[in-house]
Length: 554
Image (cartoon, rainbow, N blue to C red; front, top):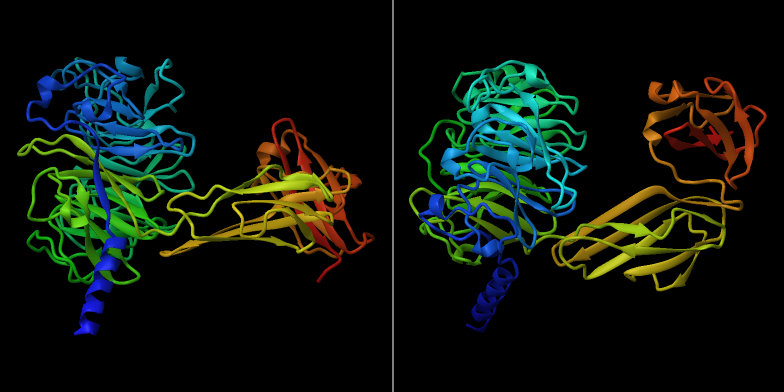
């Protein structure tokens, strides 16, 4: 009996540790949202009325953007209208580019921010992707343009033109795009809802069809995008470096797509048309009711499945109900399954242990934004240094700026090991270090809590010299050096954007002492140089960059 009681207590403790917290982040529920809609800015988030909030995203500064029936709003400590008409929602739809409130939309939905803070919006009924220039301050209106898809037709109010055409920028055509995601290379992925396809847009605006066949509804996986069929692709998120995940409400499943080949597979849910219902279990056995918004945090896929949030873990082969109660259709803040939602639409993350969801229903007063804290995440390691180039024995301070949940332990490491700790220790949040020999140093920070470990390493992060001449530069990806290591010669290839500027090329030793100015960088004779590590620098009007070269080694 004692053992049984102990077991029950342990299970209860584990459950409480993993409990997720759900709160109302912004919006005031109302059935009369059309008349209660407020056009003013600087409103308290919990006292504001939204009109059918659909899309949500965060920019790199942590600002939250909400798309609703006719506009885009920014939520900080207050709610501000940044783009779209100030008129009542039902009377203000249109397609007009411009600045701030002089612009119009027609049911904007999914959104994403690029690394610079520009917001890209799937403007559903204008059949295009709109772009909002990065937020600067409240005094400056944000400029709205068309990134891809048809420009407005003539007449009033002027709407976009639907279709399915691959092409560049406004030469392309979409048919009710609902969501958009961006990968690390700056390429976009769009769920083209009424075309039943997945579209890819490069950073330069070239649109292609990645998977599916336009206007061909169905279900099939395939080794390439051409043979794949979708029902109603709605939400899209970056899964890893090679794939995206897409929610398909009509087929009640979650699909995984290779971003290079278009190869598509069913990640979770039925592989044949099945009745919509919510069932936890293995990836194959799980069932979804109406999966829409989708996002990924720490390798776990979170899906807005009507009135619950589901968690998909491919590694453990499980689908679980993360938050919400399938039997409750109302707004209730609380923990985990004690919380309740109405009709969830979009889902995003701040990558710091929080999800954000838009919620609106025609049946129950909602039109709110919910925030869900993920309590079972490992922290995300990150750090900064007081300087990245220094003299020998000069002190550099490193600071842990990790995000997410608080770490319970940390450990700093530096390679090579020719360094002294002047303040703190390798387990400190801040540590001051002096490097006793010239060269480039690798810096690593490992942090952990009860839920996992995370590590960040930057190679050649710190440049140390006797003269201070060796610096860390940007844009090192624009030059390549081969062979490296080298014995007799070195060939340097420089990106044409730099080469046309007639760059100055120099060779330094590891102590930062200039060895030679290089006239013919396409063939550098190093046969008479002493074995060791050297640094080749390239400088022009707009770029400074450097490469490390090993000479005299096999």
